[in-house]
Amino acid sequence: MLRTMVTATNTLTQLQTKLDTISDNLANSNTHGYKTKDAQFSELLYQQYNNDKLDRTLRQSPVGIRYGVGAHVSLIQANQKQGSLQQTDRDLDFAFTKENQYFNILMPDGDGQRTVYTRQGDFYVSPMENGQMMLVNGNGHAVADSNGNAIYFPDFATGFTLSPNGQLNVSYPDGDVITVDLAVTELQKPQTMEHVSGTYIGLPTNLAALGYTQADILTDLQGANRGGIGLSIQTLEMSNVDISKEMTELIATQRSYQFNSRAVTLADQMLGLINGIR
Image: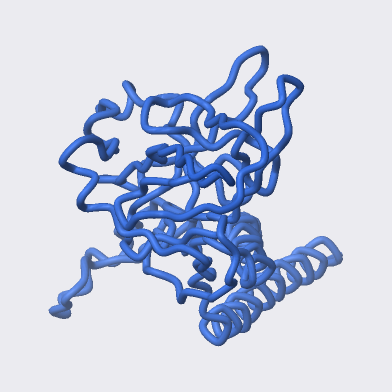
């Protein structure tokens, strides 16, 4: 009975992780640029009891009993499938039309900053003290240019246009046009990236321990490679969450949770009966 309770409790903890993942997907079903996450289960180690040595029956499985200790979430991976595009008619709303391409965002990190990546392309201009404007995202973080620096330009811009290769053109009343190349990164191994917050992902801190270098995981699209960028202006990419699939997964996971909870209850009742024997 104690083994039954341990097995069920181990699985309950992992099922809660699965429920949290599903809840996160449903909560972000309307978040632009969000990529749905899938939790994959694996079996934990099991113990083999060879207690039927006299049984000569031919079997496909080994003779005896295999006693498992539950399951665990072995991997939570993001689904990189392209989301649908929503027309916004706003000049600073951008959406990728190709998978695995991301904007570079400069996020404050302690006394410095780190580069994180997102497909959420609703950008704004923030006034600075020197009379210039800075291109930021919805959270106020600076958008990086192709050199990894924040993007500044003079105030009083009259319009913004974007080329498919990620070149932002800022127009002014006197006819001047300032051109800036937005930093775009293509992920070669997106599943090795770690979730930072919201729609932001970043390079894992234990990159060397994983046996990878930064060049193995991502490529900054520069020079001739910028021709491979796919961007659309005045549009935003919707999340790729399939609500019907998530609800189906939610029901199945809740039933598994109830089953394991019932196993704990039954084991507790059996222990109570044993302890009550006089």
